[in-house]
Length: 163
Image (cartoon, rainbow, N blue to C red):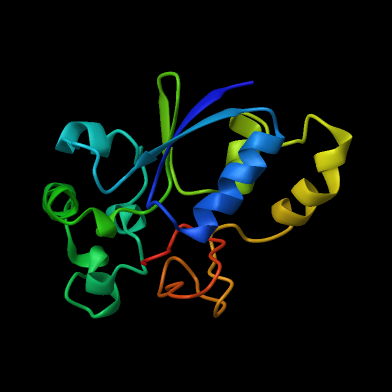
């Protein structure tokens, strides 16, 4: 089982679901506030791997939703600078296990990386239910994290929670 450093927006219900799934799989989850972490550009960049810049963004951030920030029009340096100024722009969660870092909660990718199968039969039904959902979409409105979304007042399943 892995020790997962889980950078989140505290209180976001989608992050809670994600942490429950990780815990049911026997992982030690160490939650950290994405908003108060003292990020540097290099450290933050290390979570995004070879993803296009547009995939680094939280599509539910008020600045993205309003059109003030258009991720598809930004280069990496500009994107990182904006994210350091406004952490709500960062796609969540950021996950760190050992030397590997990832962004977002893509069930198949995380399952292949550290495993998401429940360690106890009593968690199996709950885990299967959660894994059967798109844990990157807002339950409040069928939002796609690559286009729009938000989960103000809704339980979030994607990484796009903005409140």
